[in-house]
Image (cartoon, rainbow, N blue to C red):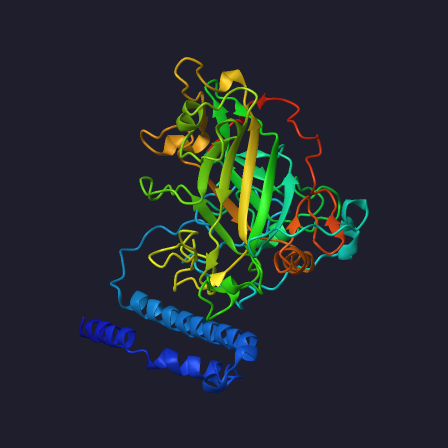
Length: 468
């Protein structure tokens, strides 16, 4: 007991004393100071940002090393519990189905924090084929798009909505088949509960956002399925995906500017997150997820009753609009709640849009818009109430239909292609659509769904939930 009490007191003292991690950080940052800060000029801004990123990486490394050792010390000082029967070996925290050759089943980090090796994120994804094979002259002519405006650039494309329906969530319920509410996936069509960043990066030739055999966008996107009062899934017509950010030359990206929003960087390789309604904070205000209808103007609504109550009617287009956070902490690619490493810029009390100090990097904002053609059976004509609901609405007691709108994202772009739209569309401030990269080239199979602009069928049966 004395030994354990001594160890606990030593642990507490170590936790409060930072010199150990600081010493490591000092060793790791020896090469970071490339600019003398007191003498820096405007020309040194890129180098200053690079130095800052270097220091951030070193501190993350030091903090992670310290935490690992403190956690182990705490574990060793805890009283040992009574022996329990040894469980059967398993690579995941829950029972797994029979293994298949398509998944590596590598479990995510136990704590849920995934450190970013650099400001670019994980090592960039490299295609096993020449990137040129997945491209064509933009719109057949190599035309360059017009300016987007507002000091921003936009890159967007259109996905088909025929993607798979699964009771899986590879972010929140990794490797737990059939444990999630029903999701509609867009992007690679073989994503399931056991998907990891490695297996996602290997999914080629099967994307609803980048049709064809040379897939350059292997990112996965998903959201709760839309159900009618008969329990049928209502098929969307199309899904528009956007990536938007201020131009690197914009005052919003320039430190010292009155409108400085944050340090503008690219979309980190392998970043993943959840946004919109939060099942762990079900009553918190929802950010980044709303509904609108072409028949009711530009107003956005929190739920479907409000949309139909405002006059959305048969023949209009109903849109679920999901805009992800646009600020990043620069340290982690994922968090235990899949949210804390990202944040939304806000106007605060200054009247200027800014990223919070805890998340100082501006990243391209990923936004998906799922569109359905409204039919008369989607709402009650007399009461103007919705006859639709989201599969996730059952997770919140008393939820209004559509109130739990949210989305998940796992980034896996081939790095060379992603750099093209960052350079050609975002940083040149262009209005790129249909997979146009802003450089005279265009993604093959990214301009419209394979079936055209209208879903071939209005509904499909919800799949059977897998047996436990």
